[in-house]
Image 1 (tube, rainbow over the protein chains, first blue to last red):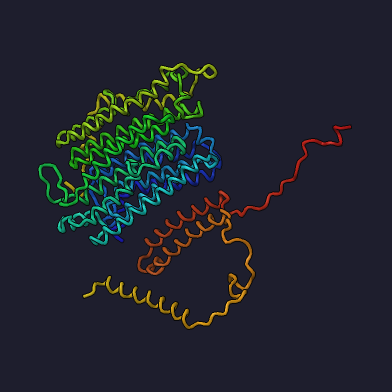
Image 2: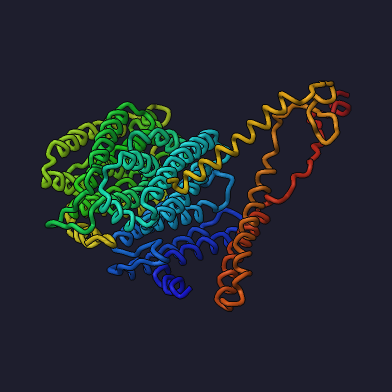
Length: 495
Length: 136
């Protein structure tokens, strides 16, 4: 009882989010029509929550009887989720698909609920809590994917997502029960110390690991578990697609990295900054396979896509592969590289999705063929999209390059040069399909019948500009994000 | 030496054996006199009608979901009521917060009309052409 009340002190950001959800729900019931008021309340709540999260920086505490920890690692992810949710709510105000749906303002508090779940995913250290948080995120994203009730594609996307999600989280919780049966504990720190004593000679542990990866891998859409991604991304409204690509998959990474680095590493033996893997459990090798497969399949399949949303879906599968490269190294430097990459990924992906929202609002389509000569019709948006595409492919002087640079240098320093080479070669392939979009936009002339100029409101340009600035600025002056990442790469219980 | 799970296994084997013995004995000893009444589906004495695989209206599921929410609420309320005297004010506040969140959800479902059982809306046919006036 006492501890619960003391724990609440460290749980203020989440409490603020819960209150925000409830207030938004009430406000939605009062206004009873589409209005920006609910979104404004939601964003205000997110800002307050973010303020309290910043206040938690540097705290290292375990709360609620070892269910949840507050550490720089979770603070980093919480800030990432909150910032991206603010942007996504702004996007949803601009999106025509959301405006045309039969719902009033439900998307605002559904998105905040997803953020709440993602925050818990980043900070939970108990397998049960991890599962619950993952389900909170999953269930809200099923609802969001089917947000356009009248659209057949949206409903189909939601249905596919539910079935796939249910199957993979079922597999994961079965693996968790096996791990619990083997070690007798739900807390990942206790599991780690028990496994260190026993040694990992039991082949069941490998099966457990693969099955748990099925659950987490589906959230980050890593390759053998990626089949839902293109269909769901294509069917869902674009703001939701962006949300799934950024927040939901970053949350998947948060829980995946914490689970694997705490559970299957010897936390007691630390030799000059590199962590030691428990004997017999070579999880980094499994991650290498998944990562290389994600990069290759993501990039090569994206080459053939003519739907922009599907292209971005395969691109985010490939980006997930790059991020997993940082996990392979399993040391502090790798974690820092992952954090730098995640910040870059958030900025450029949000930008790409926003530019796509602007385009498809006017064209009513996300087919690349329809974007022929878009640069002649709306030059500012096309240039913005160009910058984000260059950033996603990792061209220097954009934030995407910084992310890739840190990832590959972490790999090279741990003598995994061939893996860095595979990553670089994949970047070259990815350049092809990112540039393909620009080729259609800049080098083809628009069709005769629709070649008129397209204009947007001033707010649309401002938001695009806000996203373009960090993409370019952080590509040149990247000191702050690297320092921030280094400070955040500290996990509770690990030195 | 049996582990505790071994004892469970023996229990399960015996349970399965009981079922098997009962079925086999019934088949061997029992008289078999089938008739039309005996072979029909039992439905509280009524004659059965239609197919088993009929579609349920989606509204049943909405009601069922709301029912589950309150079912779970009772599960939480019961242990709370047991220890309420020792815990005092804090327990009261905690449960109040919990109930407010739940009731807000219920208010939402009510306000959005999910508890409204759709009444039939008769469509009165409208004529787009009045023959009597225009033809003459």
